[in-house]
Image 1 (cartoon, rainbow, N blue to C red):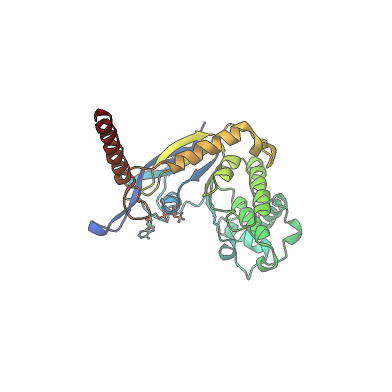
Image 2: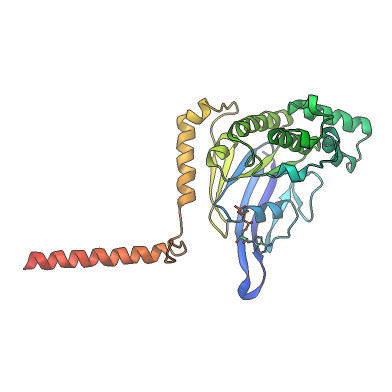
Length: 292
Ligand SMILES: Nc1ncnc2c1ncn2[C@@H]1O[C@H](COP(=O)(O)OP(=O)(O)OP(=O)(O)O)[C@@H](O)[C@H]1O
């Protein structure tokens, strides 16, 4: 197997001195070529910080990121990102075709080659008939298909996806998940996708990385043994899927007792200590009662 993405000891601290905020801590993981890996983690745990470090938009305070062995220093030309907010990532004044062809201009492809690439990916995402339309004439799900087509047109070494299906309705979400599974096979893509949705992570992934709460670290690297042919109904009903869903949910709920705050500001550890003291007092009282 060939390692496509190697994240090694990556940590990032925003600010300095007393006000510094450690967002991610010593994160290490690898994504092999052709793999689809998902990252799930609690809200605010540092997922965006990690994606910014991987895409070269941010230099991490420690550690390094390598893409096909090359140190990431600045945004790699063979990396593509699909964001949640499709309405802000597509150019409204360009047609669907022009949006898809846009990043190919800086990659030195001729007009004919750009046209051919756009035709191919638009067909794969089921939008051949919409090439002349503008993004604002399309539904949200169709706009996100354009974003995926644009990313794939560049034949990226790594496709990063940041909550790509979070802004569409449930039915469209299922359709886009299946579309992603089809196109990643067609293009043999390496994909790293961040999601809040446990079921989505298992349905899509070959591996799921579970992150701890902030500062994010990897708490589990879970292989997903569901085969390559997946179906929204039978796969989600399978014993393997149900078992993996429970496992990921349990890992996400795990908390460090010293740091988790309760609603009234105390910590879980303080609660547990109070409960222990109360239980000990109960036992002492019952011993005393038994003695008398
Ligand atoms: N530019 C910044 N300056 C200072 N602190 C930041 C900055 N960006 C993020 N943080 C802090 O880093 C931590 C992680 O934030 P980040 O946005 O990476 O998390 P996230 O998991 O992507 O969040 P969400 O689930 O809400 O999208 C948070 O405590 C956040 O306040």
